[in-house]
Amino acid sequence: MLRRLSLRDFVIVPELELDFAAGFSVLTGETGAGKSILVDALQLALGSRGDAGVVREGATRAEISAEFDRPVHLTGWLEEAGFDDGSGSLLLRRVIDAQGKSRAWINGSPATVTQLRELADSLLDIHGQHAWQGLTRQPAVRALLDNYAGLDCTVLGHAYAAWRVASDQLAAAESRQADLLRERERLAWQIGEVARLSPGLDEWDSLNSEHQKLAHAQSLLDAVRAALDALTEAEPSAESQTDKALTQLEKVLDYDSGLLPAVEALRGAQAQLQDAGHTLSTYLHGTELEPARMQELDDRLSAWLTLARRYRRPPAELPQLLNQWQSELQALDAATDIATLSAALVSARSGFEREAKRISSLRRAAAPKLAAAVTQAMQQLGMGGGQFEVSLLAQEQPQSFGLESAEFLVAGHAGSTPRPLAKVASGGELSRIALGIAVTTCQQDSGGVGTLIFDEIDAGVGGAVAETVGRLMKQLGRSTQVLAVTHLPQVAACADQHLVVAKAMAAGQTLSSVQAVSGEARVAEIARMLGGERLSSTSLAHAQEMLDLSANPAPMTNSAATPTRPKKAKS
Image 1 (tube, rainbow, N blue to C red):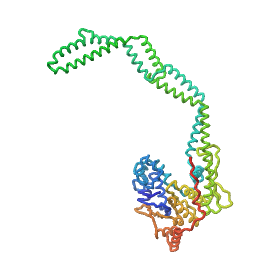
Image 2 (image 1 turned 45 degrees about the vertical axis):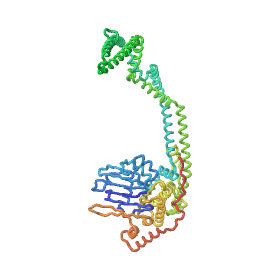
Image 3 (image 1 turned 120 degrees about the vertical axis):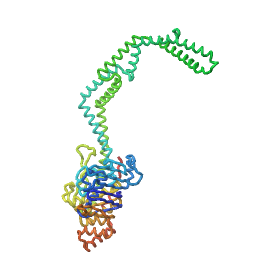
Image 4 (image 1 turned 180 degrees about the horizontal axis):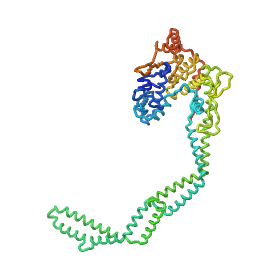
């Protein structure tokens, strides 16, 4: 639920901090005092679009902070996004400067406006005074029915998307069959040409290394022969000279141990010279000019270079090019496999139809329950004998939302034929029907969000019906936090918390303030709502009586606010 709202330099509010209680709260005040400003501020805190116009005149920026109890189901999201501060609260902050630039924070960490919007659906629902307008649009009606039925259409949407993808793939393959076949033939020919070469992954470097060795084989042999001669065969040779030096030192080593390092070095040199001689000798016996192998290498390198020039690639990239073409050929084979694509389309469509039929069945089960609950609410909202229906309309073509759309039908009084909600003429009836739908569906799904806001949704309602509206909202407040912006004293008298918005002039500017009222101040506000600014003893007495009655209400019969809750469907 909403715990606290803080504003600074927002529209006509210089500074404000409000604490909200559980249950049913109302916000009242004179026309133009700024009652809806608080609702606008909450929407900004939850990611709605803002501009420089929300900054109070003369200020550099507007700040809005809203603190909520943290819903348990958001814990994982907050942890993953780095917003979990270990507390049980959720603090949203939004700043908009005089240039219209916006910044946002969640629990003190920088956030995006998109992240604020992701939280909005879990924190509060706002029903405006023109809520009925959305109820005339089939997508909104269908979404409301699905929500009432506890439906999750995510699987259905994915199944529809898979069906469309499979359909597009088959259509593309059929329309481009000739082009795809020509492309396949081209790729197959290129693959065959390079595959005949069968280029190894590291073969190009290996060929060049071996070719260089054979091309200089005579020079290598001459150099090795000369080196071996200097080591072992020349007079004097390196080995004989080393032996001679070692023999001389070993004769006198006993007289001076200081010569030992030189002796050991010569012994090591002697061993290394012998190893070098052995290696050079082996090399001489194992190395040949091999003109036939040289010709093979020339031919192989020439084949690599020819293909590399033809396909304008470095020779070393031919193995990767072959792998790339083979992958492309596999993709083309799949794209031209009409039988496989057709089977995939049939499977995808079957999956969609199976899920769509399941959703349709649940909608058909929920529609009469919703209709009965709203019809019940209409009886208490001054529309005795009225009837509400939920009509499911089959679509000519399946859609991502299923096989049917939904429409609300209403009969305003007994004996009349239910008609589409958009064709109900009376604005007062529209408001009451919208209120009945809102209260019914919100009561059914009160576990979804912590706070419900009704922004002058009771416009066009009065008399005994207004009292019923207040009592319905009070009853709804027992299961979830409810905040109503209202001009009806009957509704205000039913509230658990009463907030009054007032405006005043200061330094040539209109400023707005909000204060919680109780006792005599609340009686005076109810009286003002009843009879205007001039309070009389009669209006004050009437206001006190309304508050007394709301504190001890008579039991409501045939309550419209407690419909049978459908079981949550498994997706």
